[in-house]
Amino acid sequence: MKIWLSGYRSYELNIFKESDPKIEVIKNTLKEYLLQKLTENGLEWILAGGQLGIEQWGLETANELKKDYPELKTAMMLPYQEFEQNWREDKQAKYQVIKQAVSFSASISTDPYKSPHQLRNWQEFMLAHTEGAVFVYDPEYEGKTKYPYEAVKKYQETHDYPLTLIDMDWLETSAREFIERKRDNGLQ
Image 1: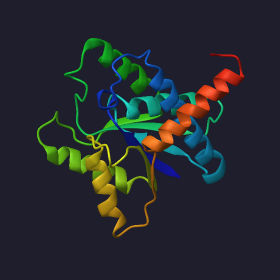
Image 2: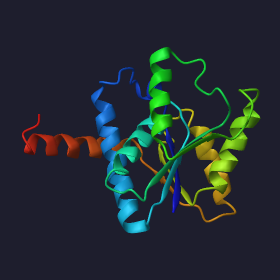
Image 3: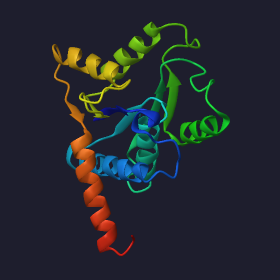
Image 4: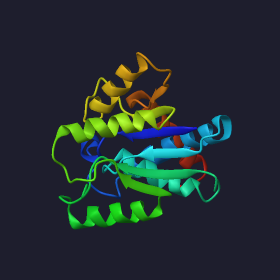
């Protein structure tokens, strides 16, 4: 089983520092979801882009899981070459660390960014090479994930393609449970 993982950019969640506690909650939520897919559904591959936010945190989480589940593979599939070129140096460095840790990395387009068509091609690639998707996304709180979300909805009109949305309610519940577990374990 191969799944496409995507979601909000970090700034869309008002996360601007790596030390933001929301990241720990998001990663924990993703870990629980991915563990379930690993143990119940035979998850083999997690494909994500390299965007700052959910895609990078998801790949970091999946790469951590590879230690206990060596059969799990991760792929950073980029829409175009020089994807991170305009980012700050610290963001580029983090991107490179994640890119080195994944099982596979490639760009769908061999050119640097030229047009939105490259992003649509990337979406089509992700749909064609996965059997389902998980997005940390809530249609009530739109962000850039609106475009892959709409691509999945359109694809679902003609294909059996499950989409799991980890929405704001799910994240809020996860955050409460995470905080309770930390408190119960004396970690808070």
